Length: 76
Image 1 (cartoon, rainbow, N blue to C red):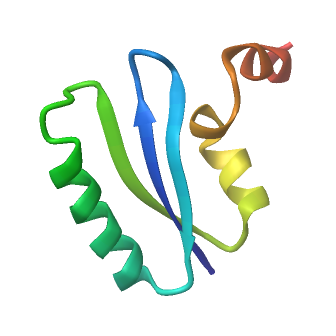
Image 2 (cartoon, rainbow, N blue to C red; image 1 turned 60 degrees about the vertical axis):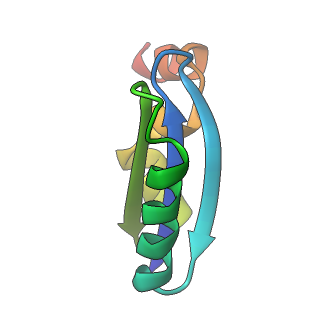
């Protein structure tokens, strides 16, 4: 399993940070630190995603990792 911390700017549609962790507890510790760091940024979304591998994350949570043009191309 892979645990990935994602810090995403919704207003810009841009990934600010992506960090992979072996252990879920480490990913959540990093998430809580990121939440403190971005507490005054209402448009910043901070999540920990867990999946078997990165390919699964790209399939299920593509909006964090792909541009709008790439997402649109997938839909076509």
